[in-house]
Amino acid sequence: MMIILSILLLSLLLSFSSALSSSSSSSSLKGSPLLSPLATAQPLPGQMCASFASTAAPGYFALYNNGNGATYYYYSIDTSALLQYCPTGIFSYHLHTSWTNATASAALDPTGTTYCSAAATGGHYDPTLACSSSSQYASSPCGPWTTNACCTEMGRTSSNGYTYSCNANAYIAGNYSACELGDLSGKFGPMVSLNGLAKSLLVLDDVIPAHPANFMENQLNALKWSSLVVHCASTKARLLCAKFSKSDLSACADGFTQINSYIAQSYPSPSPSSSSSSSTSNVAYDTYANGIVITFFVTLIFGMGIGAGGYAYYKFRNTPLSFQNKK
Image (cartoon, rainbow, N blue to C red; front, top):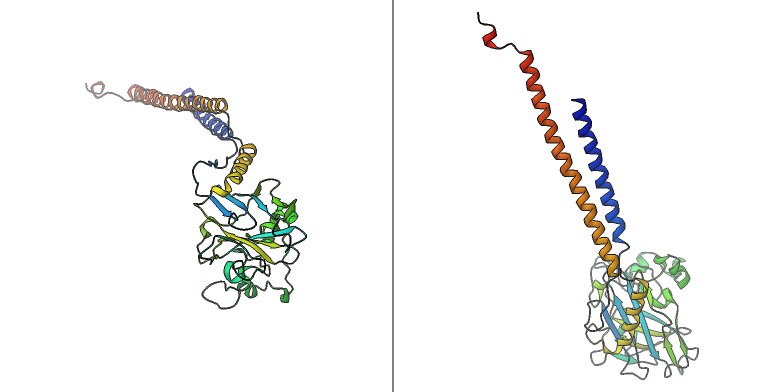
């Protein structure tokens, strides 16, 4: 019986060890998660384009949300017509909540009082209540239960000693809560005009982006985002604006190509040989684990059979038969 119990225990330990090895190997073979690929041939749900092609400052701002929590931006804008209103050539840019212009999808608005005004494009998209003075919640209530501005309710105003401290260095260092989700120039630095062109030097990779569910749709916990507004950084004047579109993407084709190239280089997919090797390894580990499990159960059944037979033999040898007691 001791031999049988030893065999059973050894089989159990081998089975458990095999399961751990298989789990560990499978886990290590999965590798790091890859981001969703971007195909420019057909519009993807996360692709959006703000086109300035119809204005005197033609260009685009491409946005792609990969569905896994990251958003990428790339822009190129002819700023020649903007420099007379902003000689420094340095521009801030933000996601804004609204777009009320029913006749145009973009506008150059030198005075910032018509198409790009606060009444037309709203304030900065700010569901996390970082509360710059231009946040939509600097003038909008938190919800239907109050009429006071949400930032005022939170005590996040300059009159209460609050300072909005978003900057690119803080954001890159991980101080995400300091920035409004819509404050893109706060997160990544301003647009800078060089020879009449403001263009991304690289793809902007946003780990805390605007919520896709809030695009063009107010929700109880957040107001919508709808448009992009470009300001002169030194005066904060609203100069250029456009609404985002999910269907009219042609103006942003180059931007999506740049984003796609960035994703391919930064998050490469596994090679077919690596994938095949991983698959083969997984099959080998699964086969080994299944063999150990089967061996364990066969040994268990065999041991139980031997134990039952030994017990029956023991009882037979130590129990007097009835005919032996008869005289």
